[in-house]
Structure formats: structure tokens, C-alpha cells
Length: 337
Figure 1: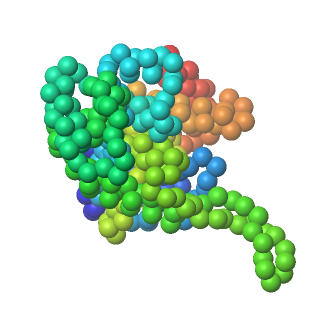
Figure 2: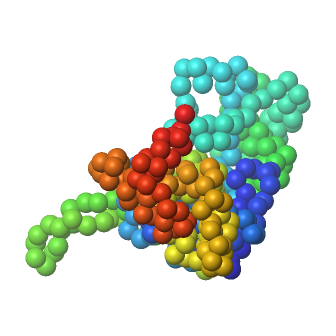
């Protein structure tokens, strides 16, 4: 069974799981810790607004690693006060900055301790060859990023302190761009030169490296997924796994050969000819039967019809002989508060 390593927080714990299977939409998959219960992981691939997938963003093979990812360094300001003003007013220098702050909640700014290094960098900047004469440069101009001095210093310091490679980050941003261009497109009317008619088709996405739209997409990326076939994909989100499986998911797990501990004990008891009824009448089984009643009502069945169906399923799955009224009682007792 394929091992899937998952890290959902920068610097957080890496969990090793056993991959079970993709769900039909190939946006969610089942995995479990060794000898643990199956969980459902949801992957949200990056996709521009208005675009659609021309190819599936994820291959059919198993994901082997999900890790936090950043394709851009944080945006910069001259002071903490400048950041407060930006956040209060929403006056962003570039559109990707707002996206980055929403995704990563991190921005960089200068402090008094940075003045010495800024003076050194300014001196080196003045000593370098320039095509045009330089104006008189004040410290305040540098703090406002004249010549890119401030941003370069803050970003390099951030990369060093966080152990990141800015060159590798730029290279991965290029791979992200190519992945989007290979998998996504925008619907449009395409003219057929032979028939001189128009048909609806998909125009592949194309970006240049510094396109504002691409930078905003890169700023929103939070995770990278690596797959068994060596391919990669990028995500805007990968929330904590869902551990409470829905009735249809539990059914799918049984079809794949997985059982809960309760289901296994009931099956073994029935195989021995014993009565599993008493053991099965616990909170978990009551909730499962109640879930079936709720699912039936949600599909438009009457409560009595849904109770009758749940009672039959209780006998088939758990060896329980109950009345429809009992199934309805289970639904009422296990409702969320």
C-alpha cells in the first residue's frame, strides 16, 4: 500500500498514512494511519477565476507527499505602522499582496536595527555603475524602496532566517506556471478556418513570468502535492482531514474491503452464531442508523419510509432487528445539538 506523507502546517508534524483510494471526483481521497480509521482528505487545486480544467489537475496515481509551499516571498513595507495603514485602508501596492496576506498572513517591514545594513547597501548601490546620474538619495527614500534596496534586503533576510532558497522558489513558480498552462484554459468561441464556423472550445492559459494574474495565483498557493508518477500539483488549501465518514463513504469503504472495528466485531459475532444485537446497541451504531433516517428524509422520503429503510439496513449491516419507530427514535436521539 502506498505511503502518503502529509504536513499541514509549516514546521508542523509530518504524518505517514496509507493511501486507500481516490473518490470519484478525484478531489478527495481516503487514507488512514497504520491500523487506524480511514479519513477523507480534500485537495483544492489552484485555478484562475473564469478558467476551467482542460485536463484533470491530479493524476490517477496516489499522492505520496503533501507539504506547505510558498511560491512568493512576503510583501514589504517601511514600518509596522505602514502595514497597519495598508490593512486598515486596503491600499495595496500590487494586487498579489492582498492575496498573499489572506493566504499566509505574513508581511515584512523594517525596524530601527536595520538602518546600518541599509546604509551599507545604499553605499554599494551608489558606487555601482549606472546609465543615468543618480538623484540625491535620502534614507527615507531607501526606506520606501528606492532602487529596490529595501525589498531586496528584507526578502533576503527572511529567506535566510526561514531556510528558504529564493532561486528554488522562482524555479518552482515557473513549474507552477507550466502546470497551469498544461491543465487549464478559458472557454471561448473558436473559428474553424475550414468550415468558417465558430464552435465553443478551450483556449489554453498563457502567462509571462511577471503577469499580475500569475503573481496573484502564485501568492495564493499554500501546498504542493507530489504523486507516485513524479508529477506535482499546487493547492490553495488542504484542510485537516475529515474523520467522521458519511453513510455513503462508509459503504464505499466496505466495498473497498475496509470495516470499522464495530462492524468487524459484529461480523465475527454473527459468523460464530452469537448474538451481536446487544453489543451493537451503542452510540455509534445508533448514530449510523439515525444518519440513514436523516439521509432518507433529505431525499424526500417520509419519516416512516426512511425509518423502515433504516431498520432494514440495520438488520443487513449490524444484525439488529428493530422497528421503523426505533430507527426514528435513534435519529431523534443522535441529532446534532
